[in-house]
Structures are given as C-alpha cells and as structure tokens.
Image (tube, rainbow, N blue to C red; front, side, top):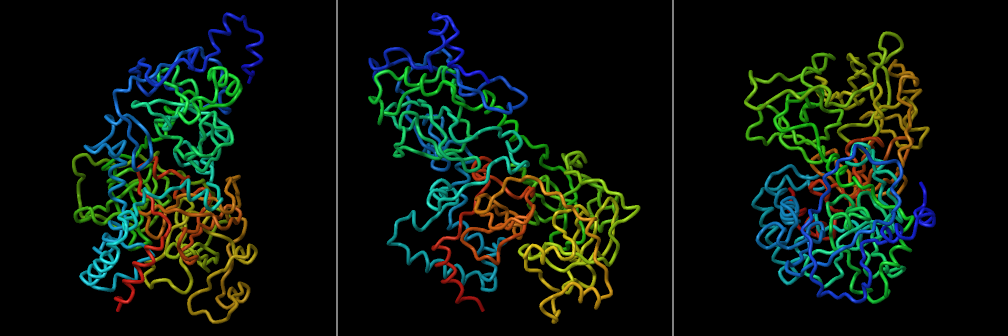
Length: 601
C-alpha cells in the first residue's frame, strides 16, 4: 500500500494543507480545558462493509478538525469492564455500569454467590463435589463461621467477583501471552481478525483528563492477549505509567480518523499536554504510515455477535445422564454462540445442558433416527407456541466418508479420550458402527452392562486415535480397569482378547496450522461441568491435541481438547459476550474448602 508520506510529496501544497490534520486544530497551545465547542454526533458508523481487508489500512491525513467538549456532563467508569463514558448514559441509579450485561455479571459472580450456589444444591464444580455429602444446614453454618472470621478484613477481600479478575495484570505478572484470536475460528472475529498486531494505532476514550465529558486520544497497541490489548497513549514514548488494558471489541474502540469524521473531541492526556507545543505536527509525524483498524471494525464486531440459534428452537442433544442416547431439548439461552439447552419434559427448566452451537453433541431433529443412534422419545406429542425445529443447515457438518469398503468394524480396538474423564486417553473398543460415519465407542473395563455409557464419535473425530498413539507421543494410556498385566502392552492385550486394532489409515491425521503455543492463556469450558468457562493454559501440544490446564487447580483436572474445539475461547471472550468467567482458584477458595472438608462424613 502506498505510503502517505510519499503521496504528500507529490501533492500540491494547497491540497496537502487541507488533508494534513489529525483532528488537532492549529494553535493547540492557545487552547485550554475551558474551551466550549461541543458535538452531538453518534458514536457509531452507519456504513456496513462486507469484510475486513487482509491488511490493515494505513493512516493518512484527513484534514478534519476536532472540537472540545462543553464540560456539562460527568464521566463514569464501568466497574465491570473498565469502559469510560458519559455518566448519564450509564446503567442503574448509581451509574456504576455501562450496560445491563455488566451490571448483571458483576452482581452474579461474587465468590459469596458462587459458594452459596454450591451449598444450596446447584450443580457443584468438579473441585467441590466432595462437599455434597454434608447436610445443607451444616454447610451453611460452616460458611457463616467463615464469614464471621473475615469481619475484620476489608469487604473486597471477602467477596471476589469473577469480573474483578484482571486478565491484564495476570498476564503481565506471570509474563505469559494470550492465544491469538485467529486461533479460534468459531469465536467472534476469529476468521477476520486480520493484521491486528503490536504497533497498530486506535482511538480510545482518554481517562487522563479533567474534562467532564468524554474525550478521546490515540493509543498504540503494546501487547496483545486474545481480544485484550495493552495500550499506551500516543506521546508517552517509553513511559509506562498510564498503560492500560482494553478489550478491542468494545464499542469505545475506533480506528484513527473516527473522531474527525464523527466530530468527537481528540485531546492529549493532561499528564503530557505541555510536552509538545504543536500536537498537530507531532501526530502527523508519528502516525503517517502507521496501521490502524479497518473503518468497518465496529460493524464487523456487531455482525460477528449475531448467532443463528434462537430461543425455543428444538434440537437433539446427548443425554447427560445416559451418554449412549440423545433427547430433544429446547434452546433457552444463547450467549456468545453457547447454548443453554433445557431437556424436553424438564420440570421448571432445571434439567439443562450447556454446549456451543458447533458442538458435536447437538444435532437436528431426526438425526438419531437417520443414523441408527439411540433416542429417548418424549411424552410431549405436540410443539408449544413458538417452538420450531432448528434448521439442519445450522449444525456443524461432518466429513463425508465411504463406509462401503475399508471401514471401522465392531470389536476393533483403538485409543479414545474418555468423555467421563477428559484428562485420560483410554483403551477403547468400537461397539457399534452407525450410518454416516458415526461410531459407538466403549471404554474397556468400565462399560455398563446395558451399554448406557457408550459414546458417539464420528470416524473422523480428533478424539479417537490408532493403537500405539499414546506410546509414540509419550502420553500415559489408561489401561482397562482391573487389568493387572502392567505396564500395559497393546500386543499382549490384542492377543489375549482376540481382537484387532483399527487400521491407522482410517483415523484423522490432518493437523491444521492452529497457532497455539505452550503456555498460552485462554478461556476454556470445563467440559465436566460445561456451564463453566475458566481461566486456563495450554500445557502440552501433541499434533492437533491440546492439554488444557485450569489455572489454580491440580493437574488431575486437566482436559485433552482438540485445537479446533468450540469450547476454547480467546482472552476477553467472557467480557465481550457477557458470560461469567471463573477465575483461578485463590487462597480464599482453599480456606473455604479447609473449613468445609472436616464436615464431610
């Protein structure tokens, strides 16, 4: 792309003067914070552009003049996401939050609420299941004792909200990196993140000012972690004192030039307002030729936040209490592409299941019958008002396979991720071959007599592996329960059971260039309790297989997940979508468990 500086050299002086202002009017040093110009332009653009270009636009001179605010309206900072805005536009009487979503998330995610939810019989996390054995009143009494012991401490230490978790501070303190948004094709902006990188300039609210109304300034991306970026206001150079983290997909982030086109004030931070006598000259020199966001960035974010599944759509989903069959469920809630499904016939909607809309666990109505999968019929004979079968095209498509020739056969042995213990890869058997490439798999040594714990994997699933996969890749293979000839040897086991291994050529050997690296941070679903999205780390990579560790918890809770799993999200996904993020286990959690554990019988 042609550099703006080169273009300026070939442009007549009169035309150049008209275009060489970055929204700063001449004679800035004669202006003060008492200036009274104002603007009522809207914060959003109307134009919708189909797609983001492969490379980011280069900042050019725009020749428009910024105005200063009138100082009549106060400013406020959202206590959940940190967004700065006009106080009168904030939500609730106290003006503490920028939106209903932030207000609800902040109040619902405190540690007290989390603990009480577990004690009151809601589905516990995997870390607290041991507490179920004690009667509720005893647990509540223990919690009251715990609260009493904390009365002399500050309130903020007694209640730790999930939204109070600071991703930026966490990443900087541990000197780690977040997985790039481009690693998550299923996430908003995952396929159109483009060349957003360190050095890109953007326009953001200026929090370092005495103005009473919202003003903006230009910031540079210093570090990226998923959707979140460490920003530094232009003009601070190597001074890090005002650096701050921001989610790039919030409405307050704009490409350079947005303020000029929208009539919004662009004002230098007060800490450095006297550093340069001519800010216009400074900006022209600093920004010409630099990259900024595409002009349609905000529109693309909004488009990516639209999801095709709607409330009351009917789907078939795995029965969480009987893995080898499916049931009809209704979409009750859609958050960021994640679906809260309520099983049909559920009393009061309490029997629910969370999964992503691209999960291999959900299918269109009629799928089970078409492939020969077990299905629990509902006693409900007709649809209620508003209910509609989700269209088949909304579901993730599987690769077509030819089962007429060389294909999986009943009784063949393989290795598979255990869906009931996702930290383990187990010795497994093909129990039944279904249509359209689907298989029913059973874990050797732990199968129910009626086959109720068989689980369905597609033949191309990245969760099944040929015999010897674990040994070759130095992964511990879980032998059949009760098998005593250890260490486990596949050759001996096949001979003893009279079995054959599934041919290696039948398995999915495709390894995409996924972009994940060891130590990268992300937000990941706890698949043993799929309503939870937790702070997590990639601790091992084997081809396309990722070992996900939940920060603050023991390794035994780690889970093997495919690199293209729709249950992995970039840093900042929960903030963007309004989903509740589970922070790492803290010392307070440990204290609570220490108090409650003696009560367990």
